[in-house]
Image 1 (cartoon, rainbow, N blue to C red):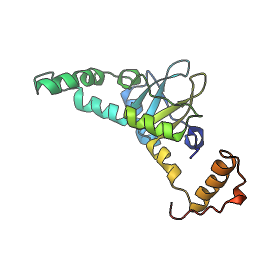
Image 2 (cartoon, rainbow, N blue to C red):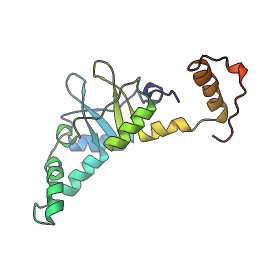
Image 3 (cartoon, rainbow, N blue to C red):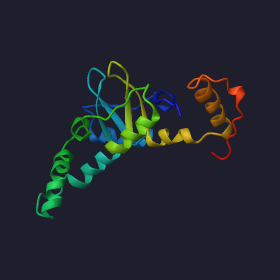
Length: 177
């Protein structure tokens, strides 16, 4: 499969400034029905990602006491608790962001999402500016294709463009792929 990130990315991206407040972000999550925003600096560079989970963590952990709920869980939650005390996107975001380029493959995007345990990847151009965003659902959407579309991909993408073979010399059949 030769699908590239630019073929599946959303280009009209909802983003926030690093000084966006908790209230602004909560309202925008509801208004735009997205689950994460890239956070941009003054130069429109992606500096982080803030997700619904980041806001929920703030609600859950901000007032939590530093007591001894358990030594291990206390150590593990210390960083999360510190982050939860933030008040703006720049405080609550996950940084540095895991990003991808528009000419990367969706296979690479899937690997990044898996390896880095993220659900969204901001897509950045050569100047490190926001070009789009992809989600796990976007990556998986390439498998929602008809047999005829897959057959044509094999004929033109594989036979003609990768092996330089006339596709008419083969009979390609795709059934319930």
